[in-house]
Length: 391
Image (cartoon, rainbow, N blue to C red; front, side, top):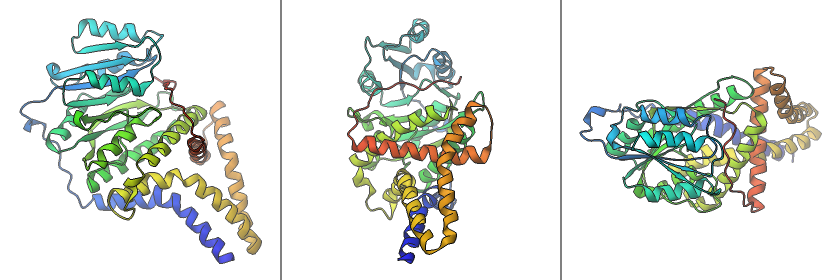
């Protein structure tokens, strides 16, 4: 019996270890064998019409900088359109956008008189586009001059149906959990780049910046919160190529408040489980190709909180056979306190890197746990509201 308990304990710990450690290492080793071909922008004789599409709600803090970052792109101005849907913004967002729309013909604002939600607005905006090449983004994601060209180049020259931008997180204040979030997103970008090299498919683009051919865009059904992930899986289900483009640089402010980020990740978790249920067929076969990447990169992470909980109870049972295992059980118990300590440290503006990192990890897994139970309780949560901007 003791041996069985130890085996289950080890397998549970293998779940996060494989997803966060072994799988990224495997992708890095495989990617080294694939030659990366740099973009030759001069080889494009004519750039196509591109429409940048995004939805806003009370984004007066960032919308001016957002529009300037798009308009300052080195993409041909006559081939660039900007289509914005305002979800009944009540601050100065609409008036700022109108300033640009009055002076720049390529900027168009669609104002809603009531809250519709991000998904409905995006679906409506796509119907208004006339070109084949679309770029989706968020109001707080700021483009580099080369970003749009880099995205479109992959659609034109690398036979991609969808292209993931390289979003770099930044924190103006460098407080709270910002350092942990920045480190995690940099880790994710590297992994996505390696997946792109190895499989020609990224396991989920970042919704803040991606390009797609209009023919590959699918309208996201009501109730699906993670529209970017839903659309990614829709493209992959049709064998479309989804690439990560490191030269499509852009920047996004990161949340530094643990509880704000916790609530955001609960919402993300709920959306991820809905997508997993809808696209569960893409997990097969789970031992090769995209099924292996989907399982290793995403699904194992989503079930890490359950693996940690089971391993804790295994540690309790094992301690009856091997008293020294009581130390392991006690260490698990202390982990429960770390998220609370992380929230406290954020409030008193104290940084303890190891405590903050472990606390952030446990807190985010707690969010996955809560999101799962919202999923199985058939939560109809779908309202969209942007988090506090730190810029």
